[in-house]
Length: 218
Image (cartoon, rainbow, N blue to C red; front, side):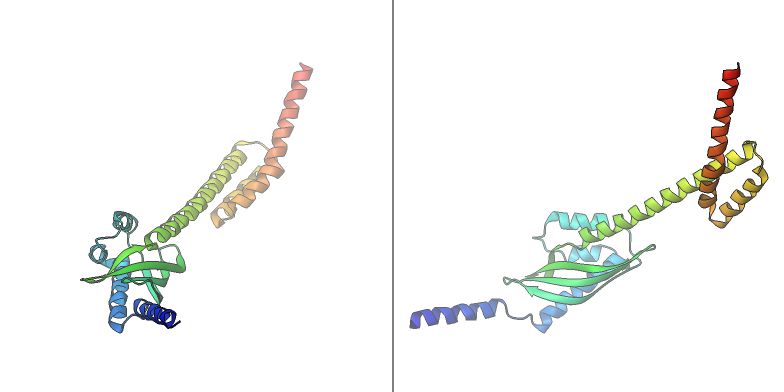
């Protein structure tokens, strides 16, 4: 019984030693590395991040950072750090971030795994370059879709305007004026759709019917 109590006590002491809270010096060192990451992504260049990457880190980490952050962001802020200790000189930092580009503003979270070395705490792994990539491509994808839709709308409006100019029908002048005014004011797609279904479609059907009648008479 005494031996069991001794073993349990020893186990608890070892756990408390391994998972002891970070010292103020360790937290300050990790916080300074987080600041380097934030400033480097925004405007300082990637060399400072490379200096704090652990030699034991996966080579893909450095390559991924280089590939993703060649272009700087307008703003990249890290905040609300939460420290998760694993023992053996390893700490995972969970942080919220705010990312601002020229066309969007996003908030979410990242994690950064630091390991203790003779040079202090060094970055061994992280997901921040991967998750930011998704956001970047997501923004680019949305902007691309919007651009395609606007371009298609403009082309459709232009085709309807040309059709109205070249086609003969009673309300031709009125429709040309409507299409031009709405196109200039940004509502060209609406007028083009109305023209297509209420005017052009009927005229095409009338012309086909006229051709059929002419062929039958001949």
